Length: 173
Image (cartoon, rainbow, N blue to C red; front, side):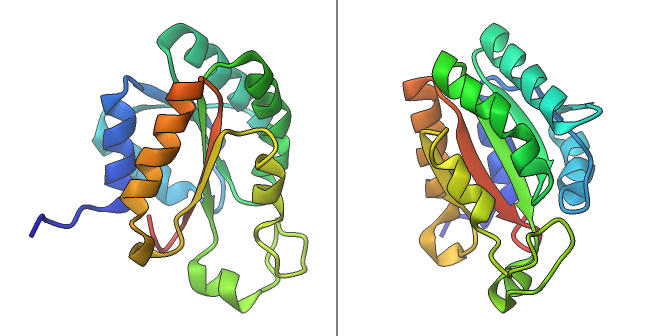
């Protein structure tokens, strides 16, 4: 049997394999673990003042380097970046939007958290992204082969040269 690999490590390896050397974003409550981890992967973190700027930086990076990526936190970060992702959908630079979300148990419990709409629905922003991305993945269940979801979304992003959206709960990263 093949050795188990950490989900975040798998994602970072795949991004590096397709040529990504830098990611853009804003540090936030739910993505701090990813940011701490990035240093060990060789992928360079480029911090920005807000998600809109991060998105534009990732878009520009994609136009120059063939693929770009941004990290945002769940909730407040997602709607802040959707204008850029919509523009990238229209203009076709492949941008990977990675969102770290609250733990799966918290989401399933419908807890009221800051940066949410307070209704227990943590899929609201992901639903918005379906209209401006070619592929989406919500990595909430190890039984549905998250590695295959990562590969499938990256493949579509590159094949169609359009943005993708991927959610990683903090307890899956």
